[in-house]
Amino acid sequence: MQRLLITRPLPETVMEAAAARFDVVARAGTTPLSPQELRAALRDFDAVLPTLGDRFDAGVFADVAQPRAKILANFGVGYNHIDVAAAGASGLAVTNTPGAVTDATADIALTLILMTARRAGEGERLVRAGQWQGWHPVQMLGTHVTGRRLGVIGMGRIGRAIARRCHYGFGMEVVFFNRSATDAGLPARQVPLAEAMAADFVVVAVPGGPATHHLINAEAFAAMRPEGIFINIARGDVVDEAALIAALTERRIAGAGLDVYEFEPQVPEALRAMEQVVLLPHLGTAALEVRESMGLMAVENLIAHLEGRPLPNPV
Image 1 (cartoon, helix red, strand yellow):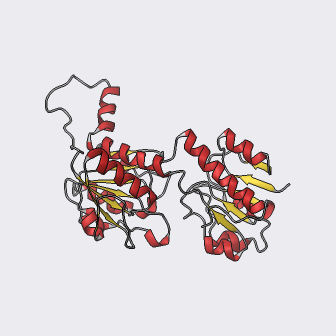
Image 2 (cartoon, rainbow, N blue to C red):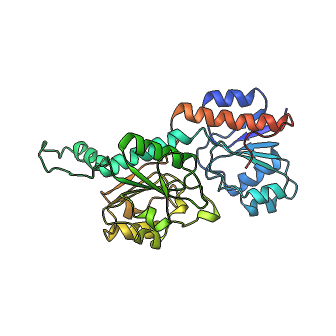
Image 3 (cartoon, rainbow, N blue to C red):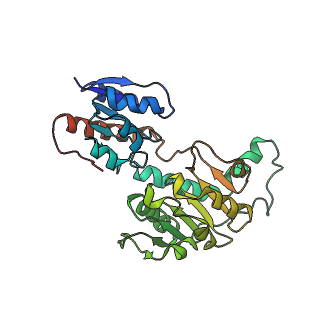
């Protein structure tokens, strides 16, 4: 039986499915693999089920000249923590879990839009602190969401799901930026990045990786309106966090809702101190049924590799 490393605890149904076909070693820690653990994973196991933060970069592969592992079945759709080219050169296949995360991540985008626009985080803190003195007509006035313009940065599966929710649920006009021409599948206009950034609400939904690193930089934030609200549910390093903090500090944009961070799990004190910013701890796919679907998809990729079948989700 092939030896499989699962790098962090997964739902029980996933662990059972993996154990039925593999000799599973399940790491108990919830932090990413250390440099030593990364190299041991390639050297000591036939297969690895990694996830966000397990940085299999070129240096890791270079240090393990003839890896025993032949597949990295990533838990998650994003795989910018894996150098796919270096993995391939070392004889490892890489898979991910697209589709399973789409709706849950789109729901978190809507959560952040509404929380930021209607000052929900700030309001809850007021109530919990015992400082609420009762309703009055001009208390904590926020931004109306219905009928506003949405700018989507990245019109893939998740971007489309966000656009559908906003257009059909909130009557929002949708514009979007995408690096290639695409049909959004709903009433929407493809526009240059600066025009998308000038929408009332801007949601980033591009994949991570070198091609999108700091795509949203100081120049992009300069295109936003003072009333604009910025949302990121993609990858933290897609955004130049220092440029975002500057735009918020100087009140050049109205607010931000973030589920991901450039140096996650580090969140700058400047962001944590801002009332106009909603901060979530990377909850994009944090629903049991979604995490089960992701895990079972990863296991199916592993089983396909074991049986010599085409991989369902190669990257």
